[in-house]
Length: 288
Image 1 (cartoon, rainbow, N blue to C red):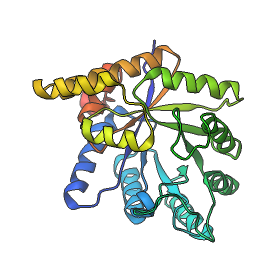
Image 2 (image 1 turned 120 degrees about the vertical axis):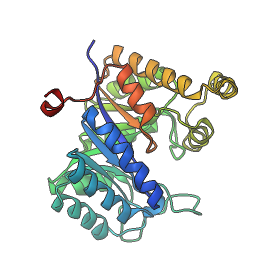
Image 3 (image 1 turned 90 degrees about the vertical axis):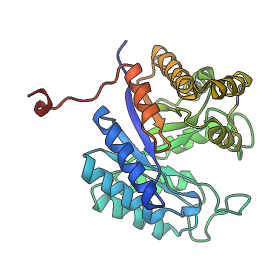
Image 4 (image 1 turned 30 degrees about the horizontal axis):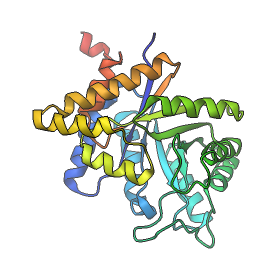
């Protein structure tokens, strides 16, 4: 059983301290030679310029393939495509195309009057440029806006049929949830890669809160385990064990790629990668 290919997600920094943390994280994980790394786009497009700066800097400084997140939120079609073309002109030819979260304070997503109505329209427009490798989001558990349990599979197929090359899933805590979703996608005629997203849990309370907001199922045993681990000072050991076991099961079930939500922290993601057989690349200079 060979080690999977990996990719990492980062988010753009909003302060000088956060900038140092991001660059330290990228520097620590770059030797693992990820297939690509991605940089998120803040809710409501709030980090548009920061995302652009992070994407271009990571690509130039660390010689990594970088995928920029791009959303439909609070922008016209021309503005959104202008951002995309600016990435391509800077040598960034990979995009994660998403509808995006509503701006802070808004209860639901409302399309810009002159913007894209949804991620399918965004993917179609980007695919027509023929300038990008396109990835989209996938939801192995019901998205909060999905009208029915099966809607997420249908919607994913529409995005892939519109021109997306691959999908990256929201994180999950039960590997069987992803495997059932993968089977449902296959039955629906989806044959493009679906990359499972895994989050090494650095802060259970923070990750748990995000999981509730995105509709991820939280097993009771995880609440109990992290409560006990906190008392014993072994949260990192528990988090590494959980993520490693998930990745190992995924690989045994035929998964070839895993996407890590790093939360701009390197140590847990690095430890999990080492545990599943991914070692840093060794340069000739290091050998000498």
